[in-house]
Image 1: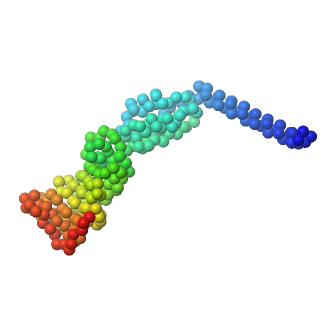
Image 2: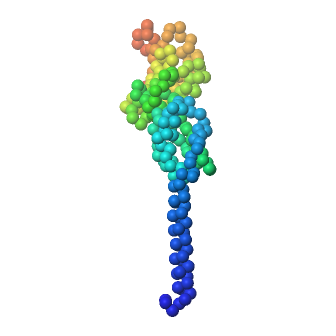
Image 3: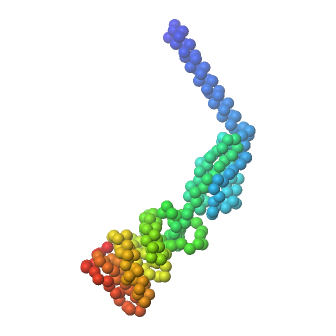
Length: 246
């Protein structure tokens, strides 16, 4: 090797190149640590509805450490997502001195019993909210499915002027829907949407004309359904052929 000048020259050039790169790396690392790239502006692109200016200012003062290059974006993002109403947050550096913040807030869809809220993605979250919302009650992990079914119930009932105010799923996966005004629909565990559609289709001709208020409709029948009128005692049963067990 020592008698091969071409190899020695190539090795020397490689070492020289590595040394230059290391020197540049050290210089850049040193430069970006200098207080000559201060962050001067934090801009929230979309005004949040529930996250307050005070909450944002607290996180900015506490978490924005370093300059434009040395900001710990992961730490800042984590701090923002710990706020009750923040579902996600996007952070972007904009040269030379600005940080842009974009929030996605939870949009409340329902209350989860008395302990939490459910957003439009079917995710549970904990936050204070005083507005009117339907109530979901069900086993752990059922919130997403209930959110999907609730939207189906809401759309179908809107066509006949009704509104769901409570959806309940039992541990055995039996569904029950309570409507504004107190009427409860018993759907059982199978063919939930088909049974629900049967009620919607029959409502104008078989339910709405009844002079007495109805408190309960049992839709767990193959053909027809049973209604319960408070003053009448036992349910009145529509024509049917056999009863399903779901």
